[in-house]
Image (cartoon, protein in one colour):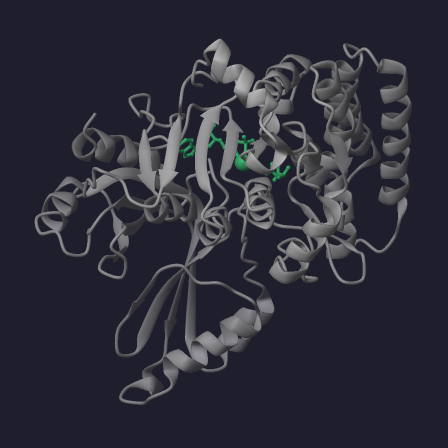
Length: 463
Ligand code: ADP
Ligand code: ASP
Ligand code: MG
C-alpha cells in the first residue's frame, strides 16, 4: 500500500464525498476465517476511507461443510459433526469480540434456523442455495462488529436486496438491469457497507447462489453497479501467480496482467478468481487489484486493459476432474447437421462445453465435472441416453486440463514444437490451439498433471 504523507492523509480524509474514489474490497474465506484474519482484514478496510463497499465470503471451510450437509445419505453423527465444525469456527471468533454476547445470541439464532432448514423435506436445488447462504450470512453478522471495533462504521447490507439473479439455483445468472436499479436504491454514496458475496435472490425472492467461489463475481458486479474506481480481491496469496503456488514452489506473483489473460487464467482453473469475475469489471471500466490480506503492503497484481510487456507465455493454469466425451456417428459421414444436433442436445441439458476437437464422424469435447467448479457440469444418464440415440458415446474421467496463458499464442511460431517435445513422455489426449490468442490448452491424465505443470513452468516461464 502506498505510504501517505501527513498532508496527503489529511486531504484524503477531508475530501468531499463527490470527489472521493470508490473502492470495492472483497475478502475471501481465509481472510475472514479466524479472529486474527478478521482483524487484519478490518484494519485493511479501515486504512483507506474510500473502501466503501466490503464484500466477504463465508469463513473458510464453512461452504464446504454446508455442501456436505446437503448430502442425501447423511448420517446423524456426520450431521452433528459438520454443525459442530461450523459452530466452533464461528464461536472461536465471537469469543474474542467485544460484543460477544450480542453476537453469540444472533449466531445461535442463525444456527437454529440452519437446523430447521436441514429438517425441511424438499431437498432440491432451491433448498440447497438457501442452505449454502448461511455461510455468508453468518460471517457478515460477525465481521460487521469487527469492522466497528476497528473504526469502520459499515452498514450490514443483505446482498439479496441488490444481487438479483435468474432462478438457476446453484449457478444463478445475474440480472444486470435489476442489480443496477437496486444498487441505486440501497447503496448511498459516502456510506460504508458490508455485504455477502456468493448469494443473491430471484424475482420470487428465493435465495440463489452464483456458483462455488462466486464472491469474486459478486464483488465485481457490485463494483460495476456502484461505478467503483477499483475492485480489490484480498485473498491468501500475494496476487495472481504464474501458476498455482501450492503446486509449483517457484511460481511468482505477476505484477501486471491484462484482463484478457487474467480472464483466461481464471476460466482454465486459476482458482484465485472466479471465472466470471472480470466481465463486469471490464464492462464498468473498474481497475482490479489482487493482493494478500496477510501481506497488505505487497502491491500484488494489477489487472489492466493493456500491459507494457506481453510475453507469449505468462502463466499456466490447471483444472482437474475433467471429463472427455467422445461422440461417434458413422451415419454422419458426409451429412450435415451432426454438430448442430449434438450441441442442441447439450444445450437443452444446460451442459457447457470447453474444448472441442472434431473429425468427419466424431467429436471429442471436454466438460468441467469438478465438484467445486463454478460451472459444474452434471453428465446425467438422460443426456447420455439422448446422445446414444444417434451416436456412439464414450466417457473418460479423471483427466486434467492444462492451459498455457499468454499473448498471440495462435500466431507465434516455435511454441508447438518445444511444447510437444517436452510432453513426449506423457499421454496428451487432446490439444486446442488457434482458437484464442490468449491460451493453448491440452488434456492429460490427472495423476500426471501436477508433474507436467511443474515441468512446463520450469521450461516456459521466465522469472
Ligand atoms: P479466497 O477464499 O480468498 O477466494 P481461493 O482459495 O478461492 O481464495 O483462491 C486462492 C487460491 O487460489 C490460492 O491459495 C492458490 O492456491 C489458488 N490459485 C490457483 N491458481 C492460482 C494462481 N495462478 N495465482 C494465485 N493463486 C492461485
Ligand atoms: N463461500 C463460497 C464458496 O466457498 C463463495 C466464495 O468463497 O467465493 O464457494
Ligand atoms: Mg475464491
